[in-house]
Length: 343
Image (cartoon, rainbow, N blue to C red; front, top):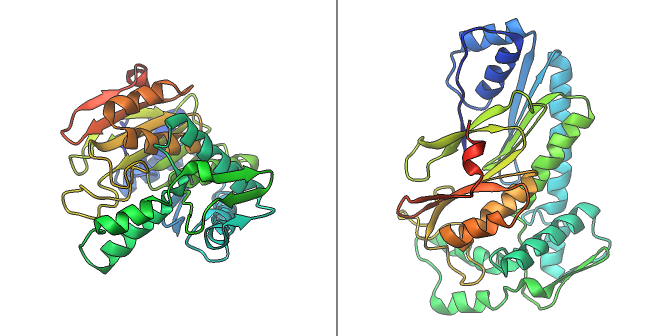
């Protein structure tokens, strides 16, 4: 996603807050204009980006005190780091990594239980279009394309795909287990959204009034219900192009074949259809608005896999969710209420 906004004529405090907020996540306002807007609004913008969760995470806070704003942001990144230490499959010591090595985790942290349970809920709702056990296939693609430009062989793909089945991932209280050796989970399609939600909650609990947290294609805002952040939806077919601008006062997530492509033609990329073991053939990009970033993240991934028509139908079944899908040919399909979300 990219962000955008429109300046007003008068730099009232309300208007200045809105423009400064939007500028904090990418609008091309000059440094002089941005400084003037902040000064007139008597606010300080604290914006910090770090590499977390395998991607770039940006936390933006508007606060009357720069020192307090910096402390809020530092505390938020500490919480993100803690959650990454639970939910990442790339760090050897995390419970998720242990589950993938050993096939079971007892006394799993509450955060892991919650995210895995919600992932299984999306798997059930989508009849397996969302499946956290797709990790063996994804790992195969990552390994093959890291070694060169050759995709997995048909034999390799069949072997890995046999290990994918969300119905063999079980949550029993605080015990999480995989039914067969070689199975593994990835929470990449849902955990970033959950962490964004927790980061926003941490900021609000510590007194921040207006915040924005972004982790790659996942974004959530708070404190902007009456004067929302303006967020533009990236066009997957046009670099730096936008499909439209939404007034964001909740959560949004985007998924696209342009984000991590294995092949120049984007035929193979990081989003895998768990039902086939291959990247979806019909979808180029999805953007979903939802009450939480977790739901936006998971719903966006699910809709992408399902494809334009089925993806929109799936989004229509979810409460408080709106979205748009773009096909490989550039056709745009949207939920019935999506137009009302555009700024």
